[in-house]
Image 1 (cartoon, rainbow, N blue to C red):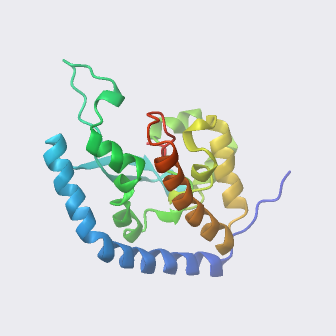
Image 2: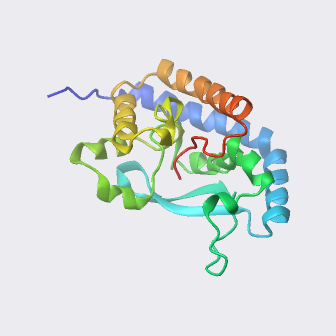
Length: 204
């Protein structure tokens, strides 16, 4: 049986300090952009710009994840598919992952971290094998190892195993690596595959 790495108190404490400090800096610096996006989405979709959904987080405890809304609400009359409910404006926001910015609030509320397993829908808990719950031993993240490795293009179990691999090998170096390559990954996807409508995205 593979030995599970015990995350040091020092690492967890410094990571939390970094999360809060960096989050405050980003929140204040990006507040004008977030207010702009709020207004643009409000005018574009003509709906409330924030999307809030209950997800399982640390120790599978429920929390309300916050994102910018990038799809028009489901209409039982028109029954438009997902790709038809995304506008040109929100498609750009979605591809650049700007819809994730409100999750800075989740970090400040100690519900998420910058790096960690991406919080999935609650329904996925029913698909878990026993060892999959290991991914809930840490705070969920805005980005993670699975996201820079192909995200939803990967089979479900492979994505979960990447989350567990990250948890078993947590370090400041790995966190920094994931943050840097998340930026590279997003820019590469946007500029090289900007015409691809089936781009990998952070799991909803």
